[in-house]
Figure 1: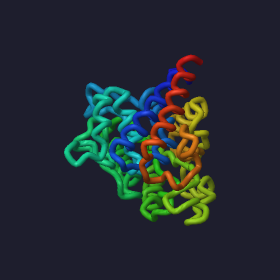
Figure 2 (figure 1 turned 60 degrees about the horizontal axis):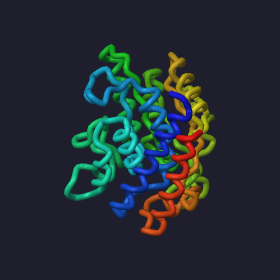
Figure 3 (figure 1 turned 180 degrees about the horizontal axis):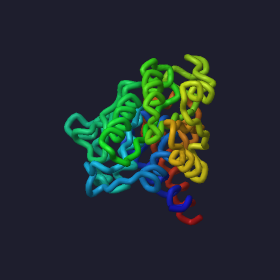
Figure 4 (figure 1 turned 60 degrees about the vertical axis):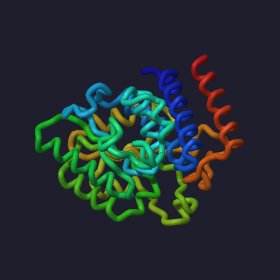
Length: 278
């Protein structure tokens, strides 16, 4: 799939993200917008999946370790055809099935319920190890937040993946530089992540999380590694696509009001038109 098609799809997903969070009056737009390009690339161009058979035992697995960014995952799953896009209107409704964090029991296409930071990547390690024992060829992918790297459980999982040489595992760290309390470098610095992962025995790859060619090269490099687990250190902008949300920690976990919603939707619809005409 070419860059134009992927750009159109990711912009459509951004529109669903903002619309669903505004309707719910609750949610996490900033980190959802920063990782949605990567999710679009994964679900439309990388992963072996079938929306008509979401439980296929040979499908590739995906775990959203930073589970608060469920609006991004849900939006991409909806556009990919796992469930109707109209279901996004039910986000965080107590009367519906679209929880504020990924829910594998009720949302088709979700491989793991997540939300408690650090547990998602741990589960992804288990999935990759299970494939090894079962003789299956599926790959497992997991997106973490850079703030999530402060969790000790993450590094336990990183050690385990290296021990078992899980070359069928690809972790992606969404490095947007911000978390709920501000800059990650101020809250709890985790840099340099590249040398840390290398010291733990991982294959380290770097990418621009908003450039589909860069992401494509990164995923190719991960698939070519046959001895180590791979991690893609993905530079992104929190709130990407909505001008007043970009690089603003205040949009980690709040919904836009009506005026902000209108501004955001106008910007995204203009981007969509531009992508379609390009």
